[in-house]
Image (cartoon, rainbow, N blue to C red; front, side, top):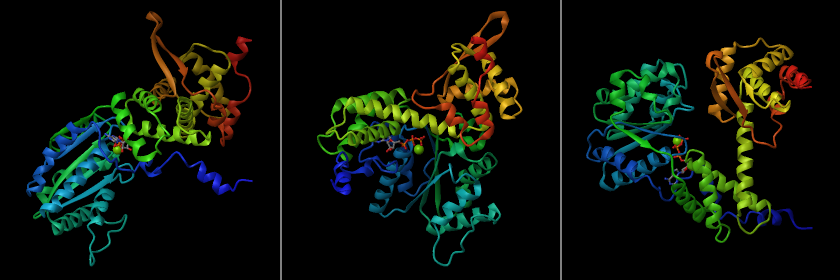
Length: 412
Ligand SMILES: Nc1ncnc2c1ncn2[C@@H]1O[C@H](COP(=O)(O)OP(=O)(O)OP(=O)(O)O)[C@@H](O)[C@H]1O
Ligand SMILES: [Mg+2]
């Protein structure tokens, strides 16, 4: 019998360095972002001369390289500052988790902690006191502080305005140090909700990251393959397919890199010598299934029940589903689950949300004087038992998932 470790090491043969596929990995070269990098450099160059660099916001869809570009520029800035003896301190805060005024300030101040300083507790101080202490520590370090506020559209609404006010007025509070803010957002309308003065101070410069084209993704993937896969395990056709598939998904480099990683794993599992088209296709199918399953599991109860109604209708051969047929099944499902139905208006909004989430395709259809309706088709990938996934671990939903429904009976 083959030793199990020998077998495992043999099946590891696709990758020369798995870390290259880790989401935290910094690429060896940043491709196709020269214009954005240049705009950031122009803004930040002042920092090296001790002036206040401008604030900026980086906008763009997911996987467009915003975080990667900001890190790349900051790293270069820090290196240059060190070489010429200028003081630049960077702070990267991600508002997905660090999402309140208190937490963001706490995180900046904590990075500047020195022996003898008080430890700011995770909660409990008045936020103004945290701000005061942050300003004191920034001044003590002096030089320029570049604060990168990543995923800033995730800030808790009640904190957002005050925090952005604090950050954009830091230079008034600081006496020896200077501060510059780089906000990063997926949401192009993010600054619309801010009051005029904060908006104009924060968005002194908007830098837009457009989705990558298939050719650009291709270049990014070739770099990754060169850095992270063994020679001879990949060729251009597999990479090209990964790039084309990812470009369809809004030019998302993260998805493309993931797709290449999963394709390489598929090749490993299949004991193949190199990644072929079938590996990429099955990796893509697996990723679509995984994504749909994660999305479905995270839905609130009523959303699950509405999606389940669409799937039950589909199972029962209702080919053209509209608001009416979904509503009919949904209200029956509610009564089986013991839930009070939401209003039909709310249900209609939720169905539209399925469209944005990629769980269903929704077309609004106008019926002239009969008003309007929606035509809805499920986009849940084949090969997963979606009704079972939606109902598991919830007795109400399980009850709703079983048995015959009116529309089915009518079909006979
Ligand atoms: N131009 C590029 N060259 C090389 N690698 C890149 C490039 N752009 C993005 N990547 C890689 O693609 C992945 C996603 O990029 P990144 O995290 O910067 O996207 P993002 O725009 O911040 O997305 P999100 O809005 O979802 O946070 C990362 O692994 C990153 O290293
Ligand atoms: Mg990011």
